[in-house]
Image (cartoon, rainbow, N blue to C red; front, top):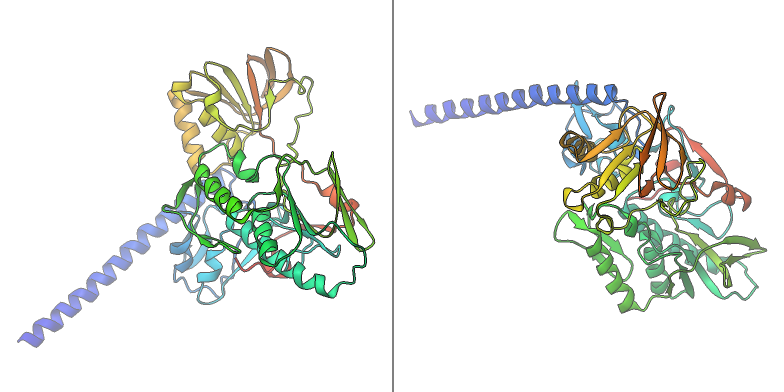
Length: 449
């Protein structure tokens, strides 16, 4: 009798598992379909960076990639196959590729409809110009974790290459690194570990682009692993940028790193088998040059009359410096939305207008879209869609709002129109730049992040 009861309980347990699986599949599929339709409707179907390409013939729908993706809702299952549900929200973590048990995912850059230009790099981030390396965001991939890994790998390769290269010219340094952001910091630590004679130049302050994030908090889904330091972990996945910079500064001081701040990089030239790095005050010779300055060094201008006025800025460091002001923020991406949200905090008393060229904020992540929408409904933030800046004067900005000309009074204007990548400069050095139309990462840079 007892055995019969156990059999019945076993069947009931199996039935319950089956029911749970059915319900999860049914409602999970419904959510995936809804989210995918919303992405298509909002024209958010093109990923802007490194992203997974799913080989449907190899995918058997285990959902490991969906569960492990740090960005909630980016991936889903549809008809038993993995799919990018919110392609433009993918930021290139690469965990999906690592976790896939059947090698059904490869990481690619660009798409047929949205190609991305990047320098042609070896798996060690060396360009086709011997001794010249490019690491970080300028190489086509975002994420602090990727940048840190690349800086270390580039220096490890450079150390090995220095032994084999015949450089008879006596240089000031073995390696000069341009930029002290995540990749430059990692490369600097790697140079010290490898006992290389190095110098790191930073045009502003140590920390690079992280200092210019308009938001205070940064998603840190994985520990960062630096040369010498090892794994740098944080108490939470959401970390304040100030905490990251404080930890990095502690390492910098402890290791007495040779980093010069407020040293603007002007140009670089190759002379025979070495390089000359030019700054306004001094030039340095080096056997190896590492470009780690990211893509934010030269903000893209609007190209309108009055853009040279002092009230215009291309970065927002601290919104608390602006109170009871009329402020216009220009741009439709995350930086613009975050700046507008920060400046429109009710306690600051500002009147903020966000000017967006398109009819939506489809370049923003969902969090920023939701915040902007809520602030707009609450009256804290005015958003003008389909609007283009016509001109700027001392007191106003003139907009073409879908054919209607408007003038808005303002004290400050923040422009977030993207950045000019230094490709003309790189091409002048002989660096090959090419467009990526969904090209697998492994064919270009086996970063193994």
